[in-house]
Every structure is written in C-alpha cells, then in structure tokens.
Length: 115
Length: 113
Image (cartoon, rainbow over all chains, first blue to last red; front, side, top):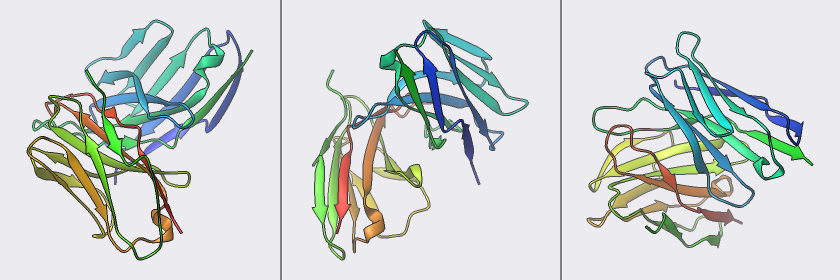
C-alpha cells in the first residue's frame, strides 16, 4: 500500500542553522506533496506544498525539493529561529480528476531550535 | 474568512459508548476529510466526503462512520468505543477541486476510559 517514510524523527539545531527533513514515498502516481507544521496542542498548518511537475519551490526561509525518479522530497529551513520549533509532517497524495486527495502522512519530525 | 471548526474540543467516554464529532468546513469548501492522530500511528486517513457522498475510506473498522450535510458540515461517529480509539480526531476541508489545499481544524481530543 501507500507509504511515506520520514527522517529524522528528531532534529536539534542552533538558531541560525539550517534544517533538512527528508521523505520518501512509495506510490509512484503521487503528484502532490504538502508539508505541515504542528505546534504543541495546535492544528497542523500547511507551510508549503509542491506539485509533481515542479522540482523546487521556495517561500522565504522555506524550500521544498522533489526528486520524482528517486521518489524523494525534502524540506529545507534556513536561518532557523526558536519559533520554528514544532513537529513537521510531510505527506503525499495522488490527486484524481475528481479532486479527491487522500493524504498519506510521514511519521513526523520534531524540530527543536535552541537560542 | 473563518477557519475549520470542530466540536466538541475535548471528550471523555467509556468503553462501549458511542460518540459523534462535528466539523464545519471553511465557507465554500465542499470536501471534508477526517484523520485520526495518535502518538503510535501518526496521522491516518479515515474518510472523505464531497457533496454529501463518501468518496473514499481508509483502513478503519466499520465502527467508524460519517456523513455530510447539504451545507457541507460533516459528522463522524464511532460506535462501541475501545480504549485504542483514544486519539485526536482532525478534520480538514478543501474546495474539492483538483489540487485543492486541505486546511485542518483544531481537532477533537477523545479519551476513552
């Protein structure tokens, strides 16, 4: 079945460093890859997403890269700040013409940014 | 525009009881998906509704069911509760069109004793 593996499970960095979280998906038909940030006790919030027809997307300090051949995608956060501390989830989905998208989530990465 | 809302936010039930959770999507969104979040299993897809029809279902037992109303509000029901049903239940809404982003509600935290 569909599966998304996410690494590392925990990541500790110093403020100002970069952080990279990697995900691998199994369904080669997946065509949509969102990343969600979940702070303690709060809802998952979409921070960036990428479609399969794009190899890279940036939004200020956040970037996502996609390698369809290897079925890998990664989240890159530069100049990390303490408020970036949260659990980050990657997800993969095969979006059908009907618009339905079942998100298959990775297991999450707990990012801790120390001042 | 108001975000996705869920009620109740917290719930305590005992084994064998049933529970109904409610989700109100963002105005204009016609698709509502439900997910279960637990420390051990992470975020798992339950089912998705679009225009009052269930379009897909995850790998959960038949005790988990749902429905959607004409105003796109959705309810999820769990019958004969088990201890393992304790979790955060999240709903997410989207326009339902191809590549529509899903926006999550705050969740309902269910504790089964």
